[in-house]
Image (cartoon, rainbow, N blue to C red; front, side):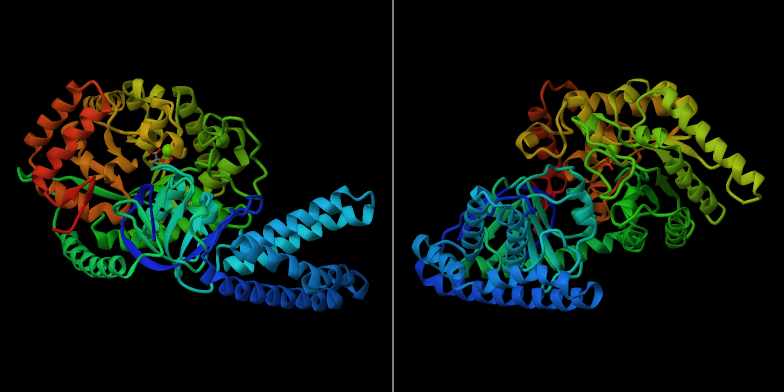
Length: 587
Ligand code: PEP
Ligand code: MG
């Protein structure tokens, strides 16, 4: 049994088999197995080799039909290698001699053979190196239960263990089979983490080397509340966690009952709780959890989960679906926030950049690619004729950027008018405040935006110069930093003075320990990940605004994030004793 600790990013507990996926260019870690489990490694190898042979035979048949027998002969080499007794013998010897997993034995043997091929002064052998790699990945994919890049279909229920996943891989995960997610890399608000939370599956990131400690097929417990992964748990641990899962389900049901009650403080202040969504299909469950609108619809996920860039009509259909699901409630569509870690695999508009988070991302990318931007704006405006919508521009860092974006929007409106296509002329146009330069100029922005929404995920990373997705500096990434708190306060004040609607849509708004602080800073509207709504509502219903204002004043007097954290933890525990380490636990 091994216990590994990482950064908990999505709560919940699951117990099932692990499925380890390694990126294609990632080395397979050397993992040893106890002698009594060596026969199992041989059996796994045999079935992976047989499955690979079947794949190749099918490929030969298909190629013969589609391209002719000459080309199909390319795969004779693959089949010959798979059936080669010498190669099979070498792999088996390595398993026994070094007591390693079959994955590692296949990887090490194939790589050694590939280097021999490279060193031979013969073009035929050199050409075969690529075939060897291809073969190696095929056998490994059978051993690991899935091809490293195809995460859309899983043969069985699994906890996915990976070095890292891109947001687009996470978006295309087979949600019916994935019970949990644990990765070596990633930070608290990496987009992969946000998606896992939205999907409602327990997730832990930043485990550093979890892929070296788990084999596919191992039994794994993932505890997304405490950020713990237990590999091959003993009987006592299994029993304890099975009982915990039952109690957790009961507790969550009791929290869900809150969904029908209003989010009001003990002194009668109504707080608005909206949902952050990535797909229209999430709206229904968000409303069930108690959301009264959508404060952030991250539209780029339609791009990330599709093979090609979606057309205007496809985008329009998605927005319409969201309007129908929201049933007349406020729906805030954020324009594309592509770039940085959200890169479309077939994108024609994205380039390699040395500092992608500081690069051509989000509104910058849209303003440099007007056809892409205008297509989206047309789709949003057309949908606005069918229900209430708000448009929100992300990553605005200067007034000129907002003016430019509004000019493009105007152009699109004029085109639609000329074509007699209906839309909502007075659609509210707001911005995200997620860059310090915008926070510092909030007063000016409030004159030109219908609403502002504070995006703390990026505001924290840009204020503190801490990459939100880098697990090595995850301890430095925190909304409790006094400078972040000050910036939030300035934005809220500026918006209140200008009577402009202000909300907060970063992950901070869904973290129990920050709720009192945020209300105390003057926020009355939070847009959060739907699974967090019951927890947040429970806290709101347990505190008074007076208490919250006192908490905010104390926080503003502290010098360091540590003092803020310690203080907030104690305060929230006083009002809701079930909150431990920033999460609500069973009584
Ligand atoms: C944010 O930055 O706080 C935010 C909500 O946007 P995203 O997480 O999509 O960057
Ligand atoms: Mg952001």
